[in-house]
Image (cartoon, rainbow, N blue to C red):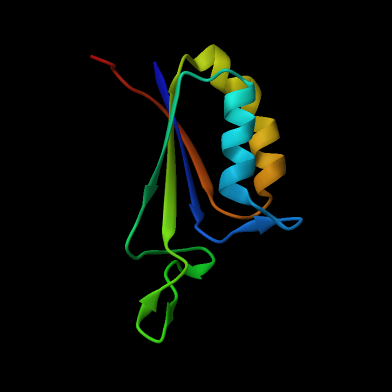
Length: 99
């Protein structure tokens, strides 16, 4: 099995829609077997700091979307995912052993 990992920010939007929702919809439509969104506390990347604090409240935390399925199902989705994301976030793909 393979793990597709997508790193974005919680409030990232594309054309007024949340990026995380667009990505999950794409994955569900493709009948991917598993996807989980993890919320980070803080972080940084090519777009700078991933968390925004407003009056002591954490606002725009980093998100990681872990997707597990066969490589043959994930590879065809990569161009669509990259197109949806644009320059927001990072995508990695690596082999995993599912027990």
